[in-house]
View 1: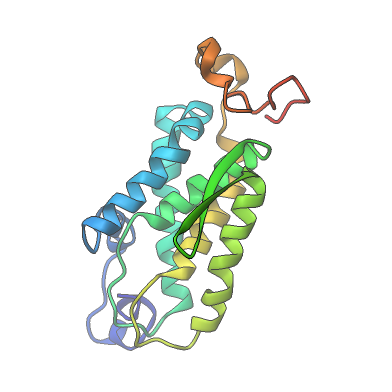
View 2 (view 1 turned 180 degrees about the horizontal axis):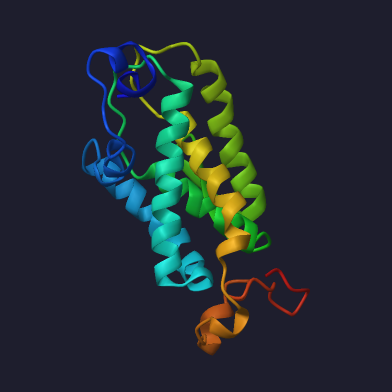
Length: 201
């Protein structure tokens, strides 16, 4: 809980730094865990390919710690424990959007009972997603007592991922080889749009 680091409880029951890391591996239920792992499954493999397994692991942990710190600083007097991997995964989304801005993502928007599917560039998706975190994040400032979504963890993780990605990505000759059919969905795994319409690496 943030108050044990930056609020009133820091004077009574201060805590070490380890919760900033360990909370990444805890979740509030099966739905929370499944949604986070599903998002990681969508964005993680391409980012890991660009960074390499070792760097990706350090990157993931760094984004998780940055997310935890951002949440705690934005809610210093909160006595509600924060947990979940969504801050670290937000960093992965930020890295994906930075390295594959033109990659096409298919999103579903339910209208009444009809699911409508749209294709959007990864950068556009990331900016819309970030806006949906920033607005409620600003509105939540000062409301220390309530639990719910840790908006500032998402924002902090995304910003951390966006900023450190250029320093961690490995050289292009270290990327894995791709099968011919991996570009059939409109963009190629190296970030180029289908048809050779320019590099997006």
